[in-house]
Length: 414
Image (cartoon, rainbow, N blue to C red; front, side, top):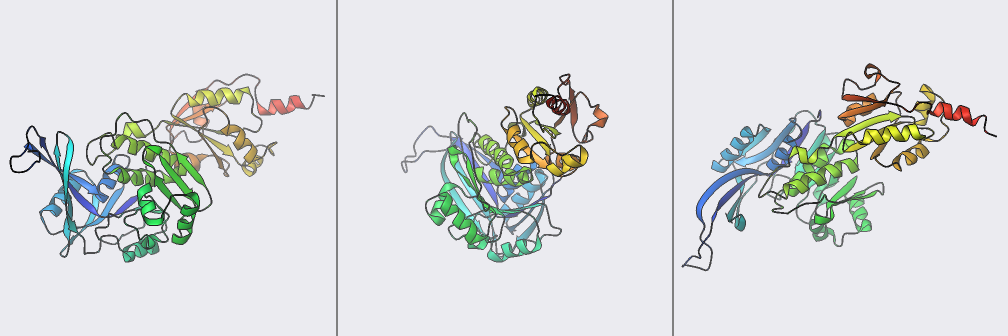
């Protein structure tokens, strides 16, 4: 990953007091928790950073803690997790802390404290993505968001809080869950969501739907629903929203659908764990396979190449020369780029088709960061564009099967 991600928002200290209960207190009908173990974890914006750190090192946190013991613990946890940060030590603030009492892995109660009355630090250079983690504790004000929008020309994503979302106007997208949306704007419908997008001048809304996955509604009228992966057991949904916005933001440049799939897998992984947790990389990151070409008239050679390519990984992405690109490097296409794209998308094993305008797909490969590049046997590894960016696999082609030969034979068909 070569993207720099800035996270700004409410950083929290999540404290877990865990023990066992075998008896009821004689003082009141509540369980007695014995043999208590205390564990501190990063919450809020800190948890967003931890989720990002699973996939990239270029993460910086901008937040506020109080001049107190809890603030010191937050700073210590950031250092232990190697999270770069610019923390303000707010004299008017008290470090936001959530203390959870657990017995036999069941949460009995939660004690909340803390608030922010000091502004977070300003950014230096503009990053590639800004993630705003708003838990309503005081870090994120309309002035803070206005400054971020004004100073940074990059996608800005917000995990919103409360029912007044006007302060988020002008960001790229917000990522509420269904309840948060309906508490703020009423019934969740496509029409209602598009009204919100227009009102807040967003490019889209990503709404998490629990067991039903997530729904992207875009300013351009797109509507994409991606199902949640199969989960054996949901243990704890704490911090799942942090994981969603972190992974969605990190992989956004690969396309909305791909970013949603990463976010779904990551969130599906963390809810199987107890307490504030980060996703397991191996459960989230797929092996991405890439191949490219003009694919003007599909024949059995193409099908064989695509089928074998798809077997090398979890996701097959096909780079397709645009009409202009194909005309420059080969000839004028028989079928338009839109027609060629539709045919490729109908082939089993092809997950994404991306049209590129350049003569070679080098920039596209650099952006996608595939694990494997596949080409046919008429290439050698050193001839394959992108061989310096990923592993290359050369597979045998079917003799006598090519678009040029198909066109030539068609000339003599009467």
